[in-house]
Length: 522
Image 1 (cartoon, rainbow, N blue to C red):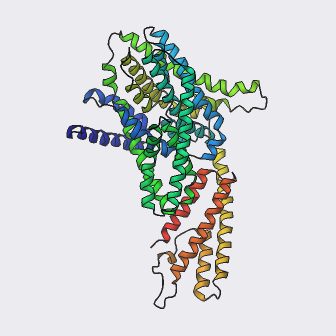
Image 2: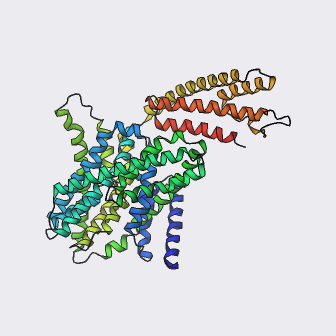
C-alpha cells in the first residue's frame, strides 16, 4: 500500500467515524446516514475502490462472529424453522424469481448470469433492521429470526452465486451439482466450525488469562473462515458455528474475560460497520461510470423493477411460508400479521451483495449487473431503512410484555441466586471452625452485601495478611464473596438452561456479578 492510498483510507475511516458520531448524538440510524453521506461525497473525491477480498476475508468474518457470539443458541433453536425458510428457501426463491425477471428485461443477458444477479441481491443484511428494531422494542422472537437469517443466508447466497457464475462461464446450469455443492459446503462448514469450537474451548479452559483469551478471540473468526474456505467449505457457516458455541460457553470463562470481551467486540463492530456502510455509498461514481449503451430511462426502469421484485418476493415468501402449513396442519400457529409485515419489510441489503457483484468475471453486461446490485442495495437501505421505524410504530409491534416478563424472571432469579449465595456462605462459615469477632463481622457484611449490592468499606481495604500472618478482614471478605458469586452464577446458568431465564437477562445479571468481582481485585 502506497502512502497516498494509506492516507485516503485513513481519511475515509476518520470521516466515517465522524458521521457515525453525529448519528449517535442525534439518535439517528448510523448505517443509513453513512450510506447517504457516502453518496453525497462520492462525486467530490477520487474513486474509493471496494476490494471484494477485503470485504469477504477481513470485514465479514469478525462481523459474523460477533453477531453469532452475542446471539442465543437456545432462541435460535426455537426459531430454526423460520430461519431455515428465510436463509435457505427465500434466498433460492429470490435467486430464481429475480433471475427470470432480469432475463426477460435483458434478453441478451445469459440466464445463468441473471441467476447470479439474483443470488447476489438475495441475502439481506440485518444490521440496520436489528439496530432499529431493538431501539423501538421489537419482540425478541422477531429480532431472533432476523438475526438468524442474516447469520446463515450469506452461505446459501454465495454458494448459489458460485454455481450460477460457473454456469455463466461454462454455458449450462446443473441444479443437482449445485445442490450437492451446497450440501457439501454446509456440512464441511459445520464440521470445521465444531472442530475449531471444541479446540478453542479446550484452549480457553487452560488459559485463564483475560488478555490472552480476548486476543485469541480476535483471531478465531479469521481462522474459522479461512480453514473452511481453503477446503471449499462454507466459511460463513464455520464462523457462525464457532461463534454460537463459544458464546453459549462464555459463562465458563473468567469475569475479566467477559468484561473485556464485551468492550472489544463493541468497538470492533462499530469500527467495521462504520467503514462498510460508508464504502457502500462511495461506490456511486465507480458503478454509474461503467454504464454505457443504455438510455437513462431504461437504466432507471431496470433498477426500479429489480428493487420492487426483490421487495415483493420477500412479502410473498414470508406470508406463504407462514400460512400454507395451515392447509396441512390446523394446529399450526401463524404469527400476527403485523410481525409478518415487519419481517417482510426488514430486507435491507448490505456490503456482501456489493462485494459479490464486484468479483463477477468478465461476462456480457457485467457493468449492468453491478449497477443493479448497487441500486438495489441503496434502495433497500434508504427506502426500507428510513421507513422501518415509522412502520413499527404504525403497526404497534412491541416487546412491552416481554420486558415485563423479563423483570419478573430477573427478580425470581436474583432471589434464587441470593439464597444460593447465602447458603454457600453458611457452609463456608461452618468449615472455618471457631468463629472470632472479625469473622462474624465479615459474614454479616457479606449478608448485607447480598441484599444491597453496593460498594462497602471492606472492599476498599487492601492487603491479604496481617503482620501475624493471619488473613485480614478485606482478604477474607473477598475470598468468601468470590465463592458466593460463583454459586450465584451457577444458579443463573441453570435457570437459563431450564428455559426459565432468557440469554439477554442472563448476560445482564452475569455482568452485574462480573463488575462486583472486578471490584474485589486489588
